Length: 153
Image (cartoon, rainbow, N blue to C red):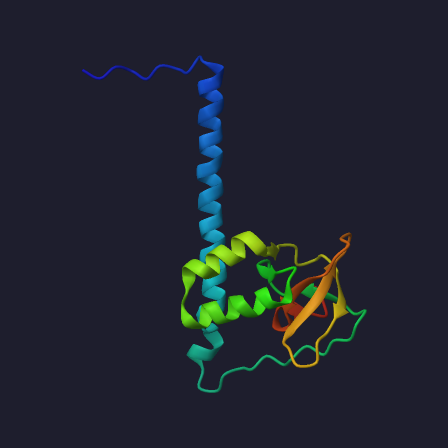
């Protein structure tokens, strides 16, 4: 016969279980974020798959000093410009493990679509732009197509 579970009285055991639960939840959240970003980079937009004439998004015309906003709550931002290009290449070739590793270790997500981003650097031959989130000191590199001039509705 099965005995009922006893409550954990030992404070160290309780702390260990809480820590373990935190790591499990953090790991699941990280996997969800990586999966979402991976789909963003690898799957075509639904407008391109459902209509005969795909809707091409116009390139956002930016100048240094402009105030812009992130188009979606999962805009990838990297402190090093080359990492944004690396993420695109990894997504194109399907290297999900390297993509996840780079995203989780050297980049971050800009979650707030209403936060102001100040354009600081615009390379001539690149689709990446360096923007500085309001209240931060350094700019981060993002894909130009993930920015809009007006905050999303």
